[in-house]
Length: 254
View 1 (cartoon, helix red, strand yellow):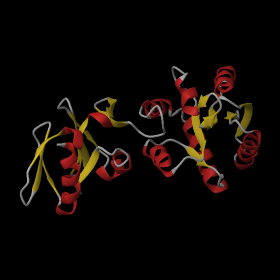
View 2 (cartoon, one colour):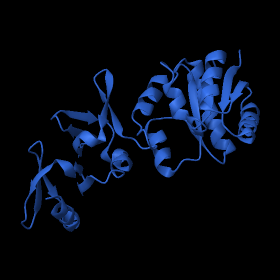
View 3 (cartoon, rainbow, N blue to C red):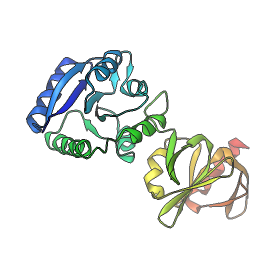
């Protein structure tokens, strides 16, 4: 059986050498066919060598690993990100089922990653479309998800967080209402999206079951219960624990 061709793209030579040694030691079904140290040369060697998998650093001279991947019309190879990114970015990788290895590299976790990638390549289940969708959902200026992928029929719709009216838990799934009035349902629970929504100051958790976009509040009641009227005419009751927080924020808004 032919070995799987691997490319390593990292701007630091010691990192490339370490990754190469680990790959060939932990899984003999891989062979290193080329290396590169920046976005431009990385793009060129991938086109030239047609690898099965690319081990890719994110922060490099001349752009990021994401920038390089956006240069391809189609991603027909596996990608394993080698990263030292923060906890938010790691959650984003996991949320989108993207393979990554955290620096400093743990041999046991790396072995499992190699096996997972190997199985997908052998079964011809390369994760390219999912990866393109993930890259499209990233904020251009920082590794935050600015779009939420939701399966809708036979396609995946990328919902802009900016355009949400609310995200609401509903019987083990999540309903998203956007500013144009359409609603989309994800099979994921609201808790799965919390790390994304909490990253945006205009998204407020009104109660356990709903995040609302404060820019889409039309009015609110001043009684013992705080009821918000949203842009789509829906009513949202704010929990007692959150009432003082939202009133303070709304006093500045209105």
